[in-house]
Length: 261
Ligand SMILES: Nc1ncnc2c1ncn2[C@@H]1O[C@H](COP(=O)(O)OP(=O)(O)OP(=O)(O)O)[C@@H](O)[C@H]1O
Ligand SMILES: [Mg+2]
Image 1 (tube, rainbow, N blue to C red):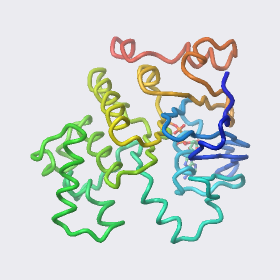
Image 2 (image 1 turned 180 degrees about the horizontal axis):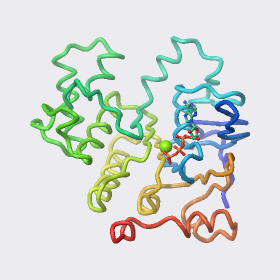
Image 3 (image 1 turned 120 degrees about the vertical axis):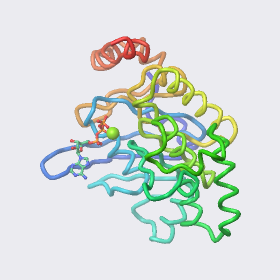
Image 4 (image 1 turned 30 degrees about the vertical axis):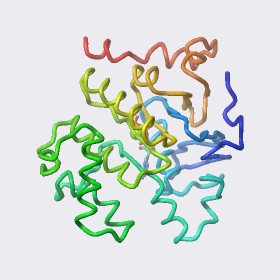
């Protein structure tokens, strides 16, 4: 099984000794892992094991109790507010629930990071947002819809378009295919691979979706028992003799099996 932190020089994210509790509830202790430049790293584990919380720590939205997160070679705990703002500009996030602003159209949602982080004119922002809308496979007419007028799949696409609005070098996707039918989920995986080929971001992806893991993940981190249980490629995970790895991947269902239930 691959080590969690080999080829340290290529690492975009380095996590060392990361520990976090909410009150009495230990979320994780002493996490050590790295994310390599240009890879798609998937984080998996049972519901409630702390995957979304970990993403919040990696995206500077949740400070850990102890340990360090180095982003692009810099210790995030030592950064000035100005530096954190600069770094946020280089990070795209698709939140677990999409988290689109309900009072804005799809196009306005996609333009939100551009309005926050740049001094571009409204016209240019709308043009960039339109390009991003096209990149995720939606048409200009979809840009006029409000979140409550979008299907689940469209919602995910708009959220992805917003996450890539600033052409981030680092993209975080929290369960992007959850709630989608198998064909839409498959199309979303293809879209992620197309974006990867076109923009070459490093991607950290949280998913429960076995098909997504096989299709897009270069490496997988399995979390559980408040720690990192295993790291490796899907081939390594599938061949692992580790009981915790076997149990997770045996009980996790493929998309096809889910749809037949
Ligand atoms: N702001 C918070 N305050 C208190 N507890 C929290 C907070 N955020 C998360 N938790 C708790 O931390 C634990 C991990 O939650 P998290 O959302 O990270 O899990 P997850 O692995 O993403 O689960 P799922 O697969 O269901 O999305 C849960 O017990 C949750 O209740
Ligand atoms: Mg979650």
